[in-house]
Length: 418
Image (cartoon, rainbow, N blue to C red; front, side):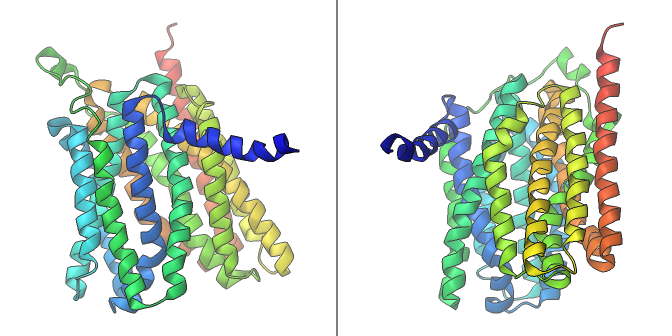
């Protein structure tokens, strides 16, 4: 009995050892930076909108416009960060953007006018986008082959695990509900983001030698690489799944189903748990370009299934609605880990290794575009038109997944000797 009782503790201990203390020093530094950054993101996502409206006094329209403008600016920032990383090094960009974002998050505490709010939002969201580009570039330059996918998957598992922890911490501020509680939570987001810089100091300043002489002439530009641009565009479509989960599903549950509002938190927690437990497993099945195409296609199929299940939750009893929504979220989460695993491999393997920063900047630009468009697309389809809108979203995700599979097969066929 004691052996059985200790098995969960042993499993947790093993998970912590594998994920939080990897043997590689760069992976370890990125892991601890990710932990601090994830806690910051979780608290911010949980309390920011209520802080902006209830404490800072901005209208919901002002908040929406500011975040939309910021999302548009972040598209260019993601691309620019890749080229900046090539000039000054990915480590420098990663540290500077992490510290700068912490300061920008603190700026939310002092803004008083809508114009100032838009400016701070643009800076904060742009730096967050640049930070993702710098992180991807650091991984691309620090590791090779399947090792890069493994590291990326572990970081994503850690991210989701600590977003869950951070959400729990933010719940304290939400439960207290006072102005000081909101101010403390928002201040914590900035502090945690700045703290994430500390472990990054252990990342080497230069993990690859800069190209010079003849090597500079053969360096490919991602803006002229049609295969990479198409893959990025398809990923921009697929990445709208995140907006579907965080924006569309809550609106769908509250406006179209009989499920209680607390279902939203339960489903988001379920998604985080599935990603934390299964992301590394999914990544191990997507280590080649062909395998990545298949994983992305499976993700598209599962997203289509999830859309159908979300649509089926309307006009049902509470028990049936919650059950169907749970099944939808499981399908959605499995789609997420498959499509992300495929995307990482394509983003790394299709890129010119001598121009990693620029290529990862283009890849992250696709994510920024998808993030910016997701609220508009999801509300204009599913939330406005119900089941017909969900069907349109299902077709969109399925087409993106199958198109990525075709692209991966076509590229592999061209590279295979006759």
